[in-house]
Length: 109
Image 1 (cartoon, rainbow, N blue to C red):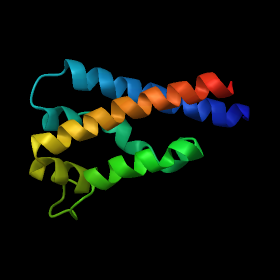
Image 2: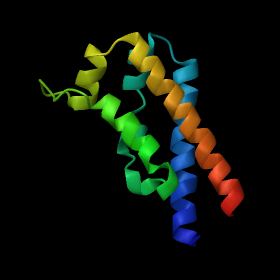
Image 3: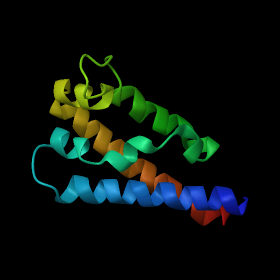
């Protein structure tokens, strides 16, 4: 693994950890907490190892299920329409992705 890729994965892991921290500690329902973790929405598939990109795509798919109907953006618009059950599923997927990228780094560094 190149140093550049390693640094990208370290940053991605840090963003995921911060997201998990906010999901676990902020007040409000899960949808509101998901809205407040803006840094995670800057991540793209290229920030993940090839083996884990499909997991990020699955999260994006849930976050962008419906097209934006206003000026707040499609993700935040979707979170407003989303059921708590779907928000919970996204939170679990974020935790699992964090675990998987941590394991990937341990095995490849």
